[in-house]
Length: 336
Ligand SMILES: [Zn+2]
Image (cartoon, rainbow, N blue to C red; front, top):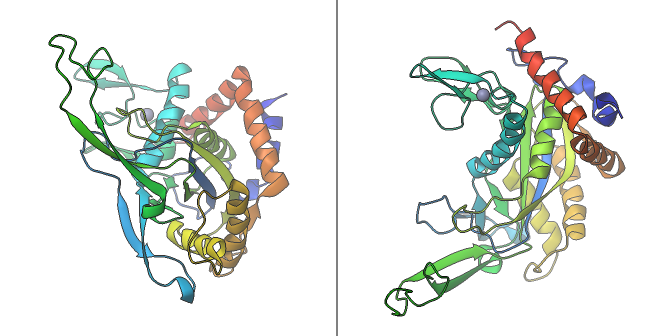
């Protein structure tokens, strides 16, 4: 199968995408609606910060019945894109597509958070970079904090445990003394759902495919040191528009209304099917209020086709490499 046939479904939407990278903004928006579901106990805190889970009090729903406050667990926008960037950069590193930069007269490949981005690789060009005094590319992947659909009180647990020693036991292997170090961790329960919209601006079909691949291949959003936190991402819809659509919070509130119905409390855990149906209804309601050209919503069978094509593209090393090279060469052709 050739690379173009891998992306044949996405290419049908080319009028909403860019033919090639351009320095000027064109107002072509692609919103990826992603359901993030924990599949194990997960801690989303920033590593080494010593903080607990991040939570915010927001309005429960959008309807009159759910106008009260609700404390929700939050996954920061930084955490979400940082994980996906790393997954994409692994591929670029493997195929030597991270460009070399000279730092203190030594050559090194483009690296995240080192103050020396190359400014030319696919990652820098799609997710953005800034060099003090030098060039910059605004990120063309925008996202916001994602909120748990259900209340924090329902979707979190807390446990204390004694820290273990090198030998994995509670007894010091040298002295035989019992461990006295007690840690407490607050975590998100398995099968907790978060809703997130990633908004891509002025991307090509190839860049869109790259971002979709990164989302579907990312699964570790939890704190790295604890090794806790497996997350499954499901792409629920792709929306093409000429303006930004609704926010993560609005979407979460509408989905909450629909799932809770006239019950006193939201059920837990919620099935993926129920969430998808509620999401469809909420999207249809909210999209009506978007001021702009009629947005095009891709979901169900057509979306499945795009996901199948993504899977077969990533199965073929040569086709994937050809796509990455095509995106990469698109930047050098462009005069800066
Ligand atoms: Zn770079």
